[in-house]
Amino acid sequence: MPTQSHTQPQMRYDLLFPILLIYAAILLLFGFCLDTPSGILLGLKKIVLNEDALITDYFHLAGPGAALVNSALVTATTVLTIRLSKEPFNGFSLVVVGLMSGFSLFGKNPVNSAPILLGTWLYAKSRKEPFGKYANVGLMSTALAPIVSYFALDNGWGDIPSAVLIGTFIGFVLPPLSTYTYRIQNGMNLYNMGFACGLLSMIIVPLIVSFEAEPNMYYRWATGYNGLFAPVLFCFCAGLILFGFSAFSKPVWAVWAGYRRLLLTSGRSPSDYLRMFGPAPVMVNMGINGMLSTFLILICGGDLNGPTIGGILTIIGFSAFGKHAFNILPVMIGVILGGLFMDWALDDSANQLAILFCTTLAPISGYFGWPYGILAGFLHSAVVRYTSSPVAGMNLYNNGFSGGLIAIFLYPTIIAIVRHRKPQLQNKDFFDAFVHDEPVVPPDIHMLIEEEDVPVPPDKGA
Image (cartoon, rainbow, N blue to C red; front, side, top):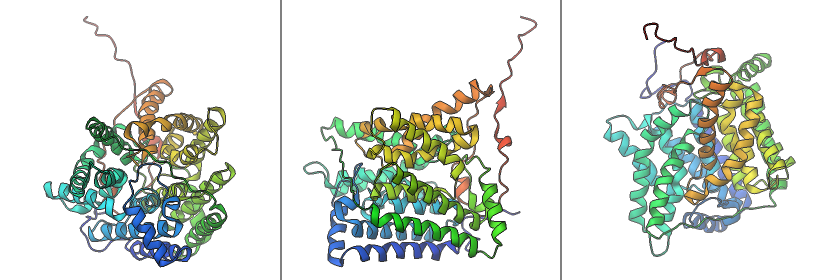
């Protein structure tokens, strides 16, 4: 089958464009149902004029109405950016939209994201390549949007021109950096951009501190919204499942069979489920994963607020690109065990976020088996608590940074000790998975095995 270019105007999943805009409109309408227009405008002003380091829950800062409207604006901007860049809609498009709509509940807004997108656009121009090739990467690079806010808003130190400059720099350097980090993680950390952003923030933040301008870390965490948002989330996820079973002219048994085949995959990146299995099983997978995530937060005594709903939306998005119930549940269980046996409460806010975002390590569970998934989650529950401090909460994808460290540690260790094979760096290009939408055959997990680590015989002539 001929390969489709990302510059072609007609793509298989162009129907996603209006559907995703409808999703943004629903967020907007729901936000206006929760607050008055004047209250929302005041809340949006607070969001834009606030330094957004972790954890800045927009529910707490500006109210759920303004937070949802901000999410709607960021989501619509994301969808239009992908469309105008002529990037084909595929499984990763759902990832980016889910992630952007989720993180715009606790750290991202259209203002602090814009300079980073400008930097990515300039990078594409410098390479004389279409912006569409890098659009998704630029959108995900907004994990470092709090740095832009800090430079723009810090009293007595930053200003708007310096904020635009640092944001442009971030957007310019992250595409090549993310390509390298993608290879060294061997597809075992789905939040590759989180790891790349973590490395870059480890350079930028110490420079800021060296100039005696240390950023402040925040803790804004809303409570009391479970009664409102639990039914909404369950209804939303149920709607995704029903949509998958009824909207694509396929019999129920065929959709269910596709979903069962999806559950057999490892989730190792890149795994574009939309291309592998079609939209119907993916919608079912998104709904089931969303329900599972919401249920676990509630039974652990957690709170449904900006950060946790953002985590649930991120999981729903990645359900089109590597996550399913069989590979995320063991990692979640590992984090829950960490909360039970380590020196912090299970319902601690950091633990709640770790339960959700630990699913970045789902490929370890899917590729090596559920015991290793539990081990990865258990390690993640401890490591993630300390990776945000050196960067003062400036990397919103802190769990992705922690997940990258664990993936780099566990992958060669398990391969060399348990499987007695030679670890190989992944040689796929980071952008290859994002610029096509033609169907692909799901990879056989047995074809992903590394080379045999066969001892070299001694030289007979020695």
